[in-house]
Length: 206
View 1 (cartoon, rainbow, N blue to C red):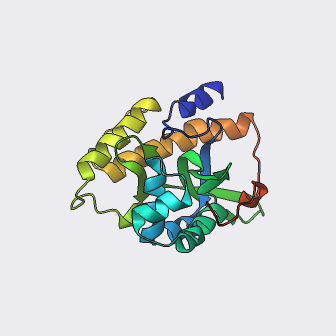
View 2: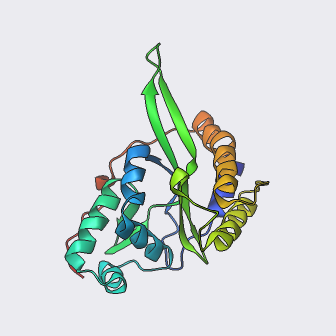
C-alpha cells in the first residue's frame, strides 16, 4: 500500500495548490457525463489545472459573469470534481477514475471502473479529460500533446504503455491503477464516504 501511495503522490499538482489535495477520486459515471457534456465545465477544469483558482479569474478568462461561473463551480464541487479551500477553488484530486455500482444476485456490491474515462492534471495541456467513446484521437488537434501527457503520467506511475493512441494508452494506465493501486489500498486500508459539502462553505463574492 505504501508503494501505491508513493506513486500517486508523484503526480503533479498545479503551482500554488494545497499539498493535501486527494490522490485519487472515483467519480460516479453519470456525474462524469454531466461534466464532459458541458463545454463550460470542461473549460473551467482546464483553467484550474493551469492555476486559475478564483471565480473572478475564471469568469474573466472565459468571458462569463461570476454568477454563471459560480453555478458551474457549485455543480462541479457538488459532484466531487472540485474542492473549495480558503476562498479558492481547486481540482479535487491528482487523478480521477470513473465508476458505477450495482448489486449482484447475492446482494453484494460490484464496483465497475471505466478504464476509458477519467482525468488528470498535466503541466503542459492543463486538465486532461478522457471522455471514452467521445474521444476522437484520430482527428483531434491536440492528440500528440495528449499522448505526451499520458506517457508522462505513465512514467510517474511506473506503468509501461504500449499504445500510441492517447485514449487506449490512458485505458492501460487506468486498468493498472485500478488493479495495482486502488485495489491494494482498499484491501489494506479503508474507504471514507463523505459529501463534498462536508468542506467549508463559500459565498459568491471575491
